[in-house]
Image 1 (cartoon, helix red, strand yellow):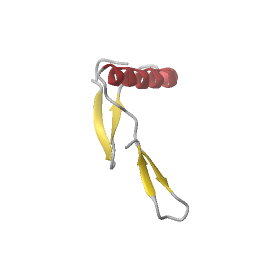
Image 2 (cartoon, helix red, strand yellow):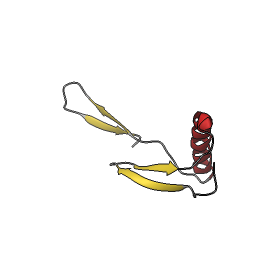
Image 3 (cartoon, helix red, strand yellow):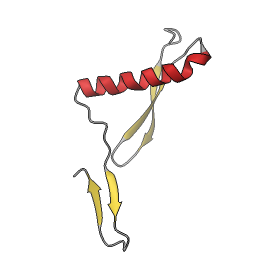
Image 4 (cartoon, rainbow, N blue to C red):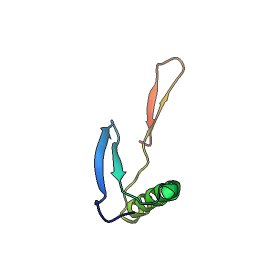
Length: 74
């Protein structure tokens, strides 16, 4: 990743139980994009875990008859 222009992060979506962020970085070797992307995501996950930030999102479970709806984790 290049130091200039500087990387930045945008809030790209707000959900009921989450905020979606998109990091933007600049690279000089496009062929390295998959590796850089993977390393960036792994780094974000590692920092979140280190600081106790839970990235799990609840799953909505709804019965077939539509009468009961449960959100996990509670």
